[in-house]
Length: 114
Image (cartoon, rainbow, N blue to C red; front, side, top):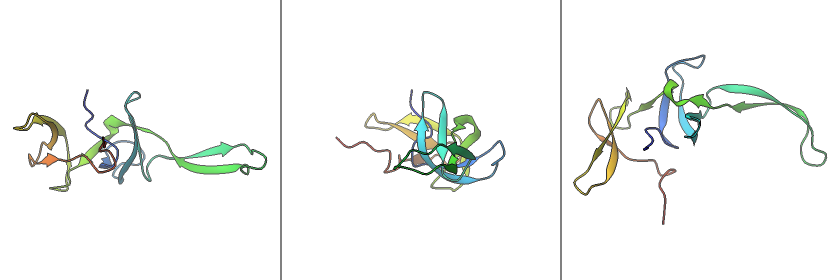
């Protein structure tokens, strides 16, 4: 199944403690239906020391958030929007903004090169 939100997309959080926060998707976890968004859902992790490698301490890191709790921000109209799919004249499946009907290109981070 095609992914509506991919790595590199700008999203806004619509539910939870970080409601209203914007950020870029750093990592997509499709098997878990979760995404990691920059600066959102910050948690503290207690790390044990590894001699000669790292020091023990409490670090802050971004935890995954469920994909249903974020909404894509359209790069054309700048509004949070739902995402649809349609086929172009060449038969390529593309994402589009349900508000302004413009095609949403995949970010450069997500494009595959062969």
